Image (tube, rainbow, N blue to C red; front, side):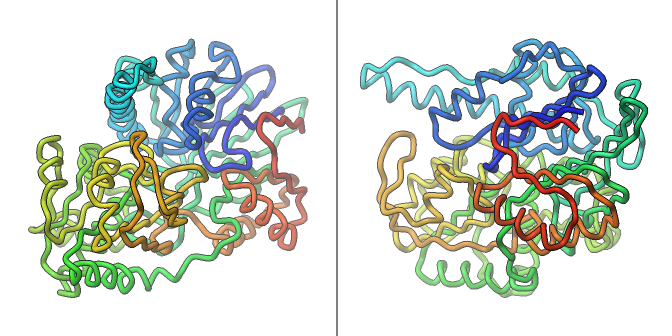
Length: 463
């Protein structure tokens, strides 16, 4: 087997790893790279391989940094299957179309400004038609159902516990008279979080490609989430401000809605409007209701008692653009949850332009923000930030709640790997900023006898 790391190597986004087994090329994930605008534009537009040479694409989950460049892949020549779990297929149906819509809309918005400056226009990375083509190539396989993808490679998905439908990708393969098992984690979830089940422990792994997003960090205990979230809401409302929460449409939005529901029911937060302002988040929440087989016991019991964890009377789901604009104009305490989580695209940018300069407001970051993203600059409390090419002073308060992360932290990753009870020969550490990946690799050496490698971009290995 040869593996080439073409994305998420010493960085978080753009997951993409190319395997070559017995002459067949298998691509693990095809995500959007998010970072410096010009670099992201070039890397996402120009794939580093011939798309038509691929035999199969295997998708770990629906987050855009893992799935978001599939329309480009299919536009430039890939005609084969994109294999994923049934929830991931449902999520990609709406997420890829939304990604195309957001890119087209943002490019139109930016090009209006560029035209005024007599600058040449940008083109969107891909269009709705490209996304529709990719969706037709999605093929779903349920968890724990072995599936032969080539004569010598068998694929099995196991629950990664990260978001709805997220999968640990396990490939059992035969090459040169030998058999081996490779596992690609995609993103590993945290145990004991609400909604989705805990990650599955997979045994007898020979080679492992593991994420390391929080490879050098330990999250706060999950029990602190409700306390910290209530404190942010109460303090901001007391100042007469808005709470703006950038959140990924899949997983994070549903998590924060679940916690706000609990706090509201317990009367621990005031009765203010809560808006989920993202058509994608609304559609995704509908998809969550379609897949109770992925829920943990707590959510199952709520549903069995006819209680909807994603709905209560002062929670308002917003689809219409005009309604979104009305919310932006309102000057009253409220909570707004909007995509994207890294503040790189979508309606969250418009909400930030109307709230970021007011010290009464709070921007609450509840997920990981990659280097060079707007979300990262907000987390670092930069004095000024650029939104749609315009400069805004950052005067709103900035708070973070890392315990809401759906990524396993350092200790949870170590426990997840060591519980596999495997004699792992080689571990590749990916999907983390360089300091996180390198630091996690050093920590992992104390817990594993495997050879541990932090690959660089475009680096390849044969084993």
